[in-house]
Length: 252
Image (cartoon, rainbow, N blue to C red; front, side):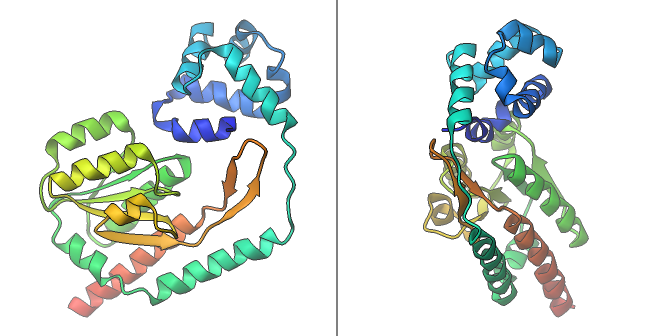
């Protein structure tokens, strides 16, 4: 597993100092392989205990394990097949065609009956997509509550009620935390709308409405880390806006 994957899976746990450390590592991976924890902390303008806590948040035993991951990354030989450009293009086209042809009145009807609306994304891209959805829903006269992290999730679970709607953005649809959250929300009578890549994933199966897009790994390294094109999250968002505007016009 690559460091990028660990960051994605544990993004909610990271604070501003953690992200500062990560951004430095990302830009100086080779140099960090030989740095002591004190040297890295100095470069990041944080304490060495901050660096140590950062590694623990990623599930590591300490700084030594972080350096092992850095060495693995440096040895990874990734090759790129130029045919992936056409394949990625086809993913976009198929997603556009699917969303163009999809009747989204089920989404519009669910939103029109909702008590409160919430949205949560599992990683960095998904969180940006969640923010974009919140903005788009304002154009449809819906106020959407953006959930930024796991601490907020705990609070929301105390106040959600039957008839509320929860959007969940997850690439794989197999994120354990999100799927557990989905089960707890459904037990309270909350309606779930998920956005994932195409496939028979658990989140899609648990959802009341499943919105999917085409995506495939365009790059794979030795550590079994897949790289996806994820602009399709935003394609789905834009079509939800367009279809919502169309639904509103038909109801006039």
